[in-house]
Amino acid sequence: MKFEEIFKYTYKSVGREIGLDVKYVNGKMVCTPLDPDDPRYNVDMTMPSMPMVYLCRADEFDFFQPLIDDGVLTIDQMHRATERYLLGKTKSGIPMFWMIDHRGQPLDAHISEGWISQILKKRESLLEYWQVRHCLFGEHLLAGNSNSVAIVESERTAVILSELLPENIWLAYAYPSNITPLLMAPLQGRTVTIFPYTDPYLSNFLFFQDFIGQVRRLYDINLHIDTTLEDHATDAQKSRCIDILDFILES
Image (cartoon, rainbow, N blue to C red; front, side, top):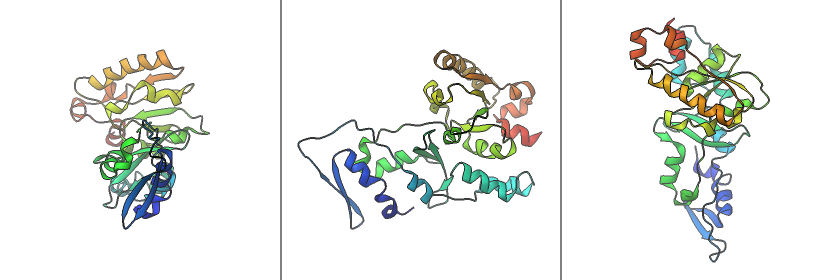
């Protein structure tokens, strides 16, 4: 991703939102207050932008290759899935899972190192005021689609299952700490099934039993928790904390 290419779509407009004239000079951002007597704080900065998403787009990812080699998925299916979720890559080839909300606004991207928002904030002091929000991965797929929703933790699982079980809209929450009742608001009025990964102590399953109760008190969502792994996974599989995709591939 070239900084010069995304500058005019992102930092320039963000600067205007917080009262700064932002210029790109000799490889650095130069910021001049538009009105030094009127500083603005607590600004809700919408970053990044769709141009940034498209500049990072990629169609081939290593995590698909074992499934292609085994005949579980085709190359065409990989390309469809990566296009569906607008997957990207960093310069070093690390997958970028964009969190794009139901209005089509990219909010952040999850990469192996953490969140793109964390990386950008460390690099550019201008982004100190960026109020980061998250959504469910794949939330942009809700627009114009009334299919039932399935939620898993791993973005990789959601992407692959969107081809294996296309009757559902597959979303992911990325991290246990990322899933909150507020994140479920765009699912109002829908039928939703959560597929927890399993573990030897049922801790994740029990967490979601409580979580579902919280969500039902706030929203009109036909919300369920899938019990496949708790009912059918072996002790060995539970000790490995497999998810529903692992179970399908191993069955």
